[in-house]
Each structure stands twice: as structure tokens, then as C-alpha cells.
Amino acid sequence: MSDVIRFYSVTDDHGWCSNFAPYPIQLRGKTWATSEHFFQAQKFEDARDQEEVRQARTPMLAARLGRDRKRKLRRDWESTKVSVMREAVRAKFTQHEDLARLLLDTGDAKLVEHTDQDDYWGDGGDGSGRNMLGRILMEVREELRRQRA
Image (cartoon, rainbow, N blue to C red):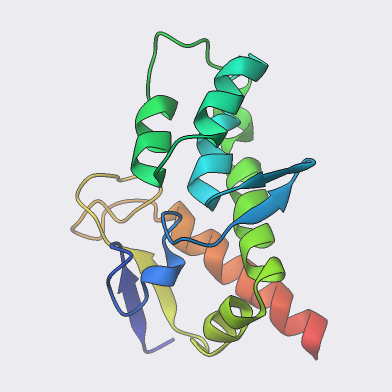
């Protein structure tokens, strides 16, 4: 694996990798403006909290609402957050053919969410983070590749 593709801002060359990228997804009977909206909403048990996040005007606002600890977090969130993220990312890349092609076109490059703001979903800015979003993107790329083989 030679190439590394770093992404973070939606305005970057690979900004479409970001959960903030403006690609609506259909999941669980609803339309979500971005994969970020879906992911953040799933943190909550309360349907009203979920709906408020779903209707947030921007992904940044959805993220802010998702981090609001006055709202009751699902008890199982820590154990389910990766599968929720996988569900969101898979929906985004299977529901938008242009994105599926862009993802497949990254070949075998390592995909890295490059940010010092997050050492779980991203690389922590210095490569020490877990890069879970990048890993999920690479998993979904592999799924797409297998489906098309």
C-alpha cells in the first residue's frame, strides 16, 4: 500500500470522504441530509432528540447537537458506534454511484481522516489516532469491489 489519501474538510480534493459532505442518505425509513446527521442522531434513545438532529440545518450543527450531553445518550452507544458509522458510510457509498466510483478510484490507497481534533475517528493529526472512519471507508471500498467483481 503505497499511497495515503488524507481528507478532512469537505473543500479538500477528497472532501467527499467526509461525513459532512452534502450527500443525503435514506436509512431507517428517513432521509438524512448527510451521513453525519444520521450518525449523530443515533446517539440518542429519545426520538425527539433524534429528529432534532436529523433536521439540523448543517452537519456542523448536527455534530454539535450530537455532542450535547444534556441529552440522554444511548446506554449501548460505545459498543454500537462503529456499526452505526459503518451503516451510514455504507449507505452513502451505495446510494450515490458517483461516490462509489470515486471511492473505488482510490485503489489501494490508505484513507486517513487527518485531524488533530479526533484521535478515534481520525488520525489525531500526527498519525497516532485510530482512524476508524478511514478504516470503515476502506472496508466499504472492499465491499464495493467484491460486489462489482
